[in-house]
Length: 337
Length: 285
Ligand SMILES: Cc1ncc(C[n+]2csc(CCOP(=O)(O)OP(=O)(O)O)c2C)c(N)n1
Ligand SMILES: [Mg+2]
Image 1 (tube, rainbow over the protein chains, first blue to last red):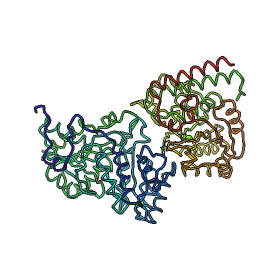
Image 2: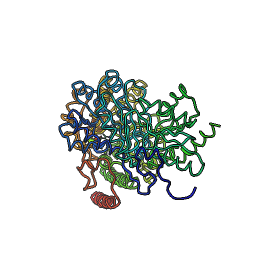
Image 3: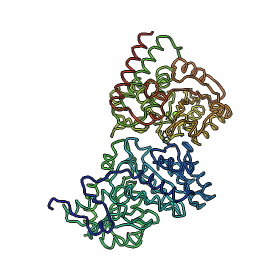
Image 4: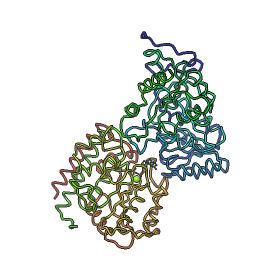
């Protein structure tokens, strides 16, 4: 294929994506979108609270604390308290957002999440920061790569993993206004901003970011960008055209979009910064096994723990870089024959 | 255990200085990590490895060794630097801190570096494991001691207090908790974020024997720890009052140094200060 940047395809235009191939693509941590969204949610409703467990700056609570001091609560290093107390506040009409590192909330507080938020059906919102191996040098103890699994298995829970900071902001607002227990997952590092203010967002509605009929790449979180880059390479170097689906809502998953992708392409690659077991891709497999079986390849961490290292060095090492996606898509394409 | 001589004390002070220099060097090389806690606990770790603990760097798996648990894993640089300076591994290895493939993970991991005894980082989990080790020692009639270093903000975690209850129930007088009482945590002063005072009274009410000392005075800490270790009938806690960032003047007392490393110029300045300190210690005695 010749050089020269291909223009965004019709799907990307429909989604009003940013030019993600541009050299000056903006890089912003997804957690910033949470911080911005929360400030606005707090303005729209005085019932929205921000409850912090000694991680104000990392979880991007600082702006909310400044803008809405009366709606901000600091409780120290106490993640189980975070959930249980929020349950109480929700029971008297508040809309509490509780934030920590995903490893500690919902990691440490899982039984409280299950009982108090879900079984007891309360309107508590969890923001799980520093998800994935891209946490980097802090190492395995701080890299949540099991959180999607433990949250998607809980009845009544809504689980959202937005693809960039702009979408994280929209998700924060939408989840604030939706009734029910939710889990919003985001990351620490700067990552590509591929959507714009005009890109639509609806909880439970997967988005087609690129059209193609050979392989469907179903991704969530910051790796949607890697999926788009991989799709470009697959087209240019291997003549394989991919549909790229931003599957931001892991629960309830957009089953129709998943089945449609499998029907349209005949094979699927799932991509997430999470254990392959029991994550977003596993849910895709559950849906397709029942409704439209096709070959599936899974991109994610293969039953291992993370470790210290440079964030994107780790993404590559654990097989979640664009090259790994290219290889998986080629395997998926082969398996179709 | 021999008592502390003047020469011993000078030697230990020099070691604590080496430990601090190792912390600064490793944090600079890592480009991320925690400064304040590691620096303020350098005297305690030097006292533990250099005088108080029964241990053998050439035989880290010795079954009768004292167990030292670092519950607040984020201050790992002080433990790594102390271990290196007391012969567990080459001091040069400190420069691999937080890098891909290193044994010196951002938070300590037992599987990669067994002599750290357990994996930590998620706060509030160390004392409970220390209770298990101390109880196991009693069951087997073993005489090793279990030391648990814990931060003040960990006392906001429920599990820590479950461990305090349990330690008292089993009268674990072979267990000593050491609290880094530096009054800081990430979001500010512990007393603003979630007040811990009256701190000593809480432990007393839970049936622990409470000792308090200047955690940046090696001689005082050793004397206190020896009294604690020989106290019978209850578990003990030493509230070690420390100054966050101790030894590097521009960091001292500032909570903002909880979780960031010095840059090159700041590290230079810190190392110059520490080198001057070292000369003073050597000249004095
Ligand atoms: C369960 C858990 N929640 C949150 C964190 C994030 N975190 C790291 S250190 C810290 C608190 C720091 O205060 P302190 O423990 O007193 O250590 P110091 O700053 O004095 O070194 C927090 C909240 C964590 N490591 N574990
Ligand atoms: Mg502290």
